Length: 110
Image (cartoon, rainbow, N blue to C red):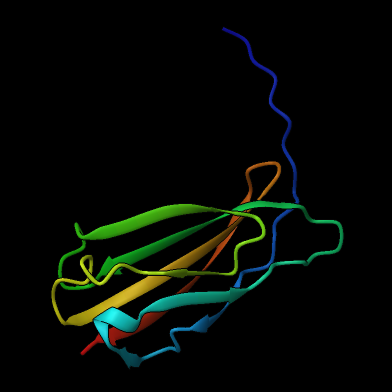
């Protein structure tokens, strides 16, 4: 087998997550993940974002979704947040070559 793959060093800046705030306590029916669009470095083309919400108490409880490049927020269904406790959200910016950078924020459901 042979293959040719184009490698790039075009890594996007990590998304700035504006909600939830680090170490915040959020009601399960009010969780909205929000971030600022990634525009750095100059010339980077973000093709999609991935958002993950992960239970710290049960790491197998993961909600993962891919969103279009123009998305900057997503409401998390309260049905996913079945238990109170510690969670983390990860927002990944994915550029056209497949490179990605993530930002992680810890929060609690209460």
